[in-house]
Length: 223
Length: 89
Image (cartoon, rainbow over the protein chains, first blue to last red):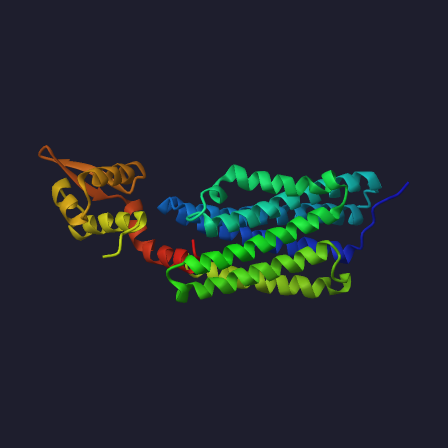
């Protein structure tokens, strides 16, 4: 019978990394949501949801890692099929949650000019479609392609927002944050789909933490 | 003159109330806020509903006054505004 025995060091690192990212995301969500509750401004609502869904994706990653750590430490001897089912669920949920996060970010940048992107039904429909795409196409490649298409849509949104924004000088600061968020996403996506060798895992985690910490600093110093 | 957006109008109304010792009659508030009667009534209803201002009565005359949430809005407005502009929201 096949059993699941991951390398303990890797899953512990994964659990610590995910917990820091989701804690940062929920902190950002809480602070932006507070500003939204005061002003009732739709852009703040959409922007806060970016961090809510990104946080949820990393929260699940943390739960799965913790589960794997428990399995290894307490020798639970879980069957491979159980773990496979859990991994499949977590991958689907993470694909949904992270796609929703990117969709909310795009919405927050474009809602003033394009009504449809601010529509939450539209946001979640696209995210669900992306999450179930591997089941439809019976290949993870479809998920990878859709994630890259989302990132292209994000770049386009940033460019359009910058073009129509009245205060271009101030916006350059935020442009740095969006570029960093883009780098963070690309790095984590590449690691998930094994486009980057696993030996670089720790280096990517460290770089991602620095990027996320910088984003948090840029946002929290204002709110 | 640049057209004010919704948040700027709310900020202006709250600031007028604060600058008048946190107690002002509807007529001078309408005059200072530079809004049409219809828009003024719409904004006042919204502010009352959101708990940013409250009505107070003295000798059968109605006054508007800021709530704690209204003061919090004024304190944080500048930072929130800058944040929204920086992030293109």
